[in-house]
Length: 213
Image: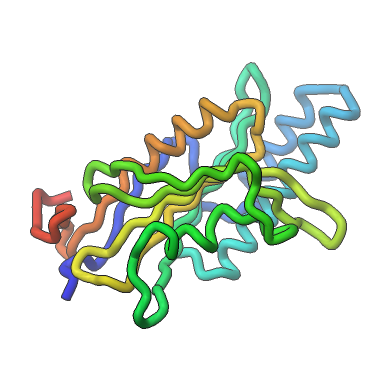
């Protein structure tokens, strides 16, 4: 039986676990729109905020355990990103092998096809160990006729003491030109993930208890 009862994930201070349709998002959207008079740029900003709302609605519909987001204006422009954690059970008899875990991840929801830049690999999360990771530029269906592209990173965290349960940390951003910076940020966030017991004691990759979180 696993001693892990909870998980912790650190996100930047500018990320908030808020409803993307709330007041904070509205203020950020107004600030972003006020920063430019260019009609094309204003349309792009509106599209990005609509994407944000749809991503969060989808996360909640699929039972996300955690959902956080950021919509931050920098001098270089608007940066948006989303982070979610999902609980997933493998079917009876399946193993937590890389092909099984990655088969359904990193596939574009708009057409069911894996993007050309999809990469399935392993990564090291300090408090978890070696895990499966899938990255790629996914096409996501927002409405019946509107698709958007998102940089995505999915990282699978096997639950200590279980052979059938794992958590998926999913991070996404529509800021495609910032590909390398976005993936570096996503990796840094994911590497803070750790399992803890009810009383806050960190569970090591081997399943033994470590220091209090």
